[in-house]
Length: 147
Image (tube, rainbow, N blue to C red; front, side, top):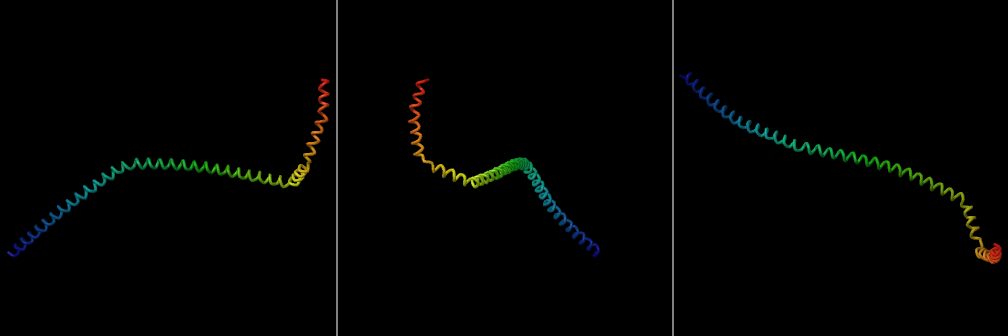
């Protein structure tokens, strides 16, 4: 009986172990099922969010690209204007240098001309013009009579 008793005890222990293993597997299956449902819901949510965000992101990137192109065009125009301004500045500087050279070269002659103009006796000149008018006036009247 000892052998059969031992076999019976071993069968009971094996049965107990199998029952515990079965319960553990049932609990594990529940957790795996819950995890699978959670992962499925996450995938669905990510898919929905992706379909909502992707068009907005594409529109935003298109707008950003257009803005960058416009900014590049504006910078190109600004560079062209800066080149024009540099050319004008060079031209103005050259003109100013030429005027300075002309003034320097002609300053002595200009000084003499201004001195000669200031030396003119305008009162005497006015008196001479008045005397000339007084002398020519009667002659003009006389020549009008003969016409």
